[in-house]
Image (cartoon, rainbow, N blue to C red; front, side, top):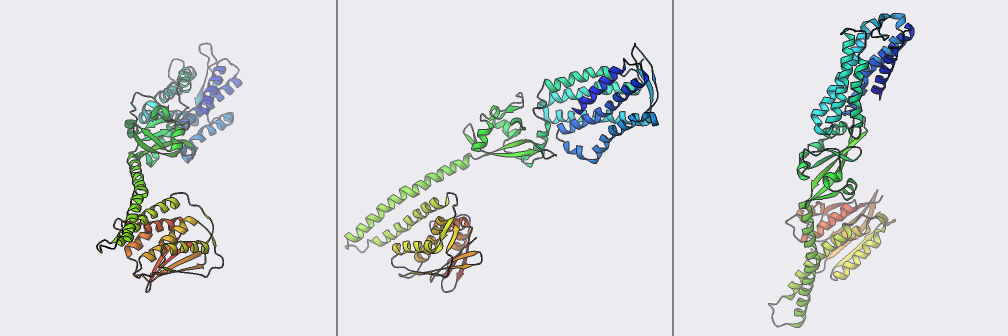
Length: 514
């Protein structure tokens, strides 16, 4: 808009001046035209830099010096009658029946005109670079704006070097017709201001643009303005197809739906969708990147694991219940064959059923969101101890507490599950027929402590690692499921586990009290 205003002021002032023979008024109109001419180049290069994503350069000291030239020129032209630093010997020199003038340009005037011509040329080079780098998207508008400067620069050079039979006639005003035609086509006949190369440049600066995954570059209107080679191959996007285009026009799914579901299915291949904003030098938004990460194999594995989980939870549980029932029937109905060891069958089925129970309990408590409620630690521990006494009548479970304030904000389900697994682990690994376990509740600054003590052999290092790892160790098999469940519970509680051994194991679960 600044460049257009400069062109308009120049054309109106110079065109009107050709009809004015009064010397003072004619010099005033010539002054306006000269000032406008000095602003054209700096405004045009500023437009080129901002349009192509280099707007940060407009806030540098160098551009400040460039912008200062037309400002100083304005002041000098306004006061030229006092010092003559811009021109001298101003006089009417009519040709072709018009009030043309001639005068001697001074060094500052030549400098101001040269700066305007050079900056206009630099603006053209910036737009040429946009054509080379961004191809078909900006070719028409950038070419039109680039060529729009050539008539203006030609007219100025002819005038400043006094070329032609009537050098006092400033042909720039006539050549403005070509300038106007090119700019009109660029501004009206194309999508020049629907999107800009700044989006592309910001995408190039982003490290994500170097990914091999399919990437869609979107402008601020949410339209696709470029694809990387992976995206072109995925969506079979040919070079003859033009930008900008809607996201649905490329992917078959509109942008809002894609971002809402965070997924897109392309011919049976499933992709997760990630959005990354693009910002220019001035920190304003110039668009965004949509990056597609293929998750087809991952989703298939999840489905397979889901099926296997259902088999464990239902089929295996049902079959083991049948086995246990038959073993109990054998045990109570026959004493004839000592080789028939029904007890071992029952124990094995109990172990397998415990594994299935751990999976089911872990899934129920930990796969949902963490929910913190006001929880009475002593009551929760009493409840867990009572359930385990019923399940293991031969075990002795002691509960002691030094707590005054027994209430804490925590995930009750995760706490119960962790205590159940830790206490049960102490019971089932006892080497005596009458296991003995002690639970002690206490508190330190900012922390509640629940300590489980037994008289068992030292917990193996591999099992301690299970309680502190993010996943089940492959050598632990089913035994590790309960320990893995405890680890997940501790994470959900934002807690910590400590291990000690002194004629027995001491496992301490610490959870924050605040």
